[in-house]
Length: 134
Image (cartoon, rainbow, N blue to C red; front, side, top):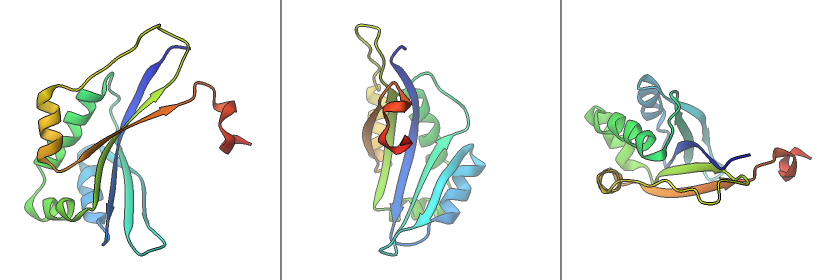
């Protein structure tokens, strides 16, 4: 199985419910996978694009464009989030010998300008090794 880019999640957390932000993202083709209140009363959500991308740079740009186009009230909800994170997911594999993808300096600048962070998650190639499947 080859190493492959899966997708980029947008993970959000805020002290108050940001459901209107989630609705805005939904209307832009960035759907909520989860939107819930946490035990401490804060709220968190996870979003990903409906469209699949071949690389994280293009995927992140699509999400940033929706954020940049948001009306002021929605942008205020974004700014109130205590976590705004692009979480890039990869599935491990046995090849190729080397695999790399990158972000352009323009995309990195835009991530900073919207006040977001960046994370990479690497998943094992075989779901049967996932302890959650037992």
